[in-house]
Image 1 (cartoon, rainbow, N blue to C red):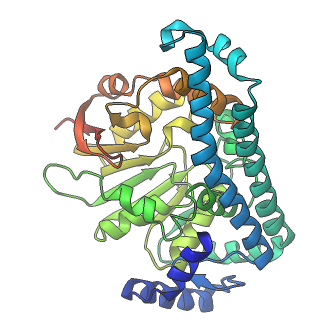
Image 2 (image 1 turned 180 degrees about the vertical axis):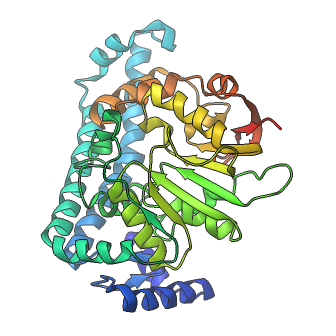
Length: 391
């Protein structure tokens, strides 16, 4: 399927695609942009056919693990619970759940296939960019000074310890490898099973961002912007707004800026903390946070919410996006609790247990927000929780 998707994309000749390619060529002349095998829309192809082939294999494996194998593991777990007469989460502790499941061959096959496939993917990507480090570092250094948009790096900025984990087992995490942005981008293409190579998922999510009641949108901030896909989608939806994306990881915002400039989208990126963003009071009309909160500590979560309230203007909207903000939340089952533990301990999502149990609505209200739970949601058959600063 990935190869079929690529052929479909290669054959697509839309006006938007032509514009992106035209912008990319102009940018390449100015910066020496590295595109060893060309570009499909806004996606630069991987540098070698061998690497592309290995990533196609990794993606096919992930597709199988996330669908058929995960469903088989869930069925097996539920059968074990039923055999033991356990019908609800209140009937068994997490410790006993782990003992019941940790040696089951189907469940462990799913665990090892998920993690080992992911480690294989990261290894291939890290090797590819490090083996050609001079070329890619030179490209980033040139892009740092180019536009459209701006880049702010803060090499002396305090990096909180909670941000240094190798989330999703990514080597070096988001702050510890010069090519964290490169690896994250292609790694998440793997996660989305090649369904986000033109930022489709981010564009779709951004379409659900509510506007302030007065309709005024001059400035937008995206927290934890990673490689900038949400920030660029926000600029495309609100072209008249000044859009900023911030992230703790310098390699992430460097890549984000390089990519946005490459495709000709005017977004500003800065290496800053979401809990200490440095912008003036009442500055933004909209603040977004796409899949950020499950990556931060409980203490940082509270600080980020309060800081976002400070930086939003009265009537401004805070739109956080990830599963816990669905209304109603996904059901809390024995299997989901086990998966939360697994994600924390095997997938280096070290804050996932806290994230799953955190009372976000209460934290928003304590910070001074009005919580709305009826906003349209990126998740089917759900509404979404958003926070609005009181006028």
